[in-house]
Image 1 (cartoon, rainbow, N blue to C red):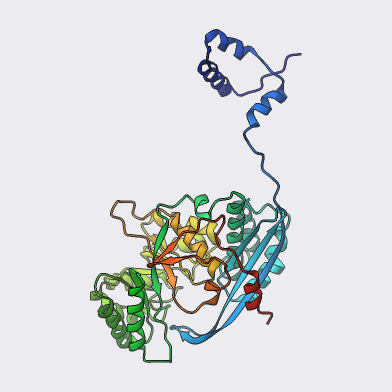
Image 2: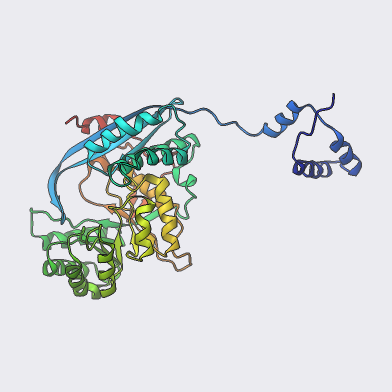
Length: 434
């Protein structure tokens, strides 16, 4: 009994190429080959012989961890004084024994509740590798209640864990799934110069600047927000200390109104400032535009923004020159890639905010390493990723192999997934039940 047509028309052309390529192949053999209709099972075996069918991987459990640790020396910036560090981690476990880790940039109590009692139960039994589908599903579930804020931070943590699982299952470092990297390392800028009470800030800032320069950092970021005169004096001090060749940014953490931000910008714009970060409220894009129109310093912002929907008006208005999404808050790696694509349409640079643990730092590094330089020319500005230098035991102690820093550059992990092996004993040591 004849078997009906088995293959699309294009496959016959493929058969012809095969027949003519083998020894002794000719048009007569080709005609014979095309007339053969082997059993359907054999055809399917040939088609799928080299194709491994998708294995079944299911989420079997999700666990959150609130980590808390006192600081040896409290520090502050314009909005807050820290006496301890706190973060929220999530572990996603699967039927195949692969686990993924993520982190949320949010107060712990609400984000833990969001994962444990709302988002997490919705996805047990789902395949964590179906990342886009999971993202859209979870975002839609929370859209009526929290299109920004805690629910998106919770989604971010889960999304990072999904990518960790997917790249571990593929046995490749995460950056390879995101597009690959041009170089094995990414230069950093040192974020420091926080406000401390142990010594005069002038002395402390000078010592920090010298230290970062000696470690090989080619740029550094100074905290401001103490008033125009004090800020200007400290920024001038740091510039004198490091000289003209090292990049210098300032970060007000939205301490000022537009009038005051303009006054500070005009006082220091002769110091070759790479960017002025969060000069005014993150709720005031028109305030950014006012500042931008009156000073000759590029503006940066976005660590307080969420999803591409939140970033879009900032890009459309050209309110910022540098976008700083935090992958642990903005929607994770999945949404970070969309934000970066949207930014490129409006000629906005993207350099992620990274203030978290070893997990958040690794996620930001993989994401950023896979992003093309912008603009795409041979002389394009070098990529610079944030390297927070404040005390943070979760960055240095919860991973058996934290990301390595050499001469002011993060080295890309080559292990599968995020590339950081979590030390469970350390996680439990810092775990808070309060």
